[in-house]
Length: 237
Image (cartoon, rainbow, N blue to C red; front, side, top):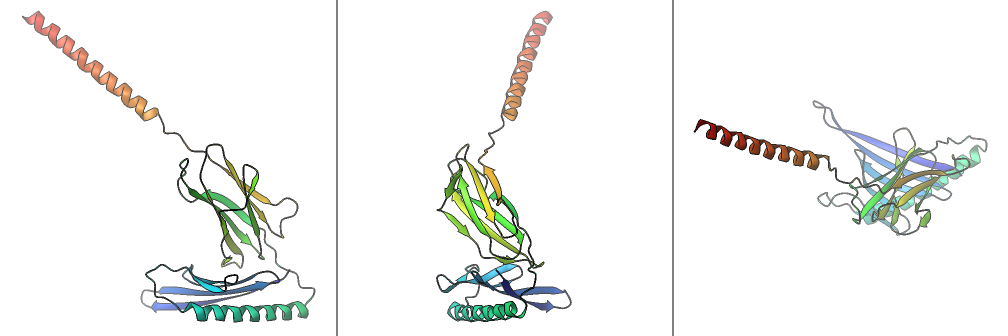
């Protein structure tokens, strides 16, 4: 499967004296099975096109100026058609072209500090791969999970490879083991799997023990001092 993408970047100098630069990014990508259109600024996404729901998704904070997303979604659809046209031209022009392939690196971690029986989110970060797509699946105690999971848009990196994030909403229970498995055309044989187990550190008893011992010794010292003070007064009387 061939993948064709266009990455356009605009640099804007706000003040040449202070050399403040803002970078806008426009990404269009397509293949036989994938399509993506994303616009961002300074490394943050502003919106992307959801081709399943046929709408543009605003990912900016509420205080940002609103954009006309109806027009942007129509623009995204047109750009994908152009992308597919260019992809077919390239495939027909050179049947022997070798495709760049980079394997993914993965990591898995929780969004928040883990507390038992408190809802949290597991994040599976897949990075450094080319071309898309990658498929991500989750398991809990070796059972496949099909609910409460999501997959982000592909995020282009400066080296031409991609990032993607998969999340799983879960409630930690002691002893549970989760895994994130990544499938990519660069991986031969077994897919790439990372595991994560619920391991909540118990509160340390060391400080409490030392405080208790210190308090006991302190009281013992006061009692001993009082005893000798009383004995000394009796000897002087």
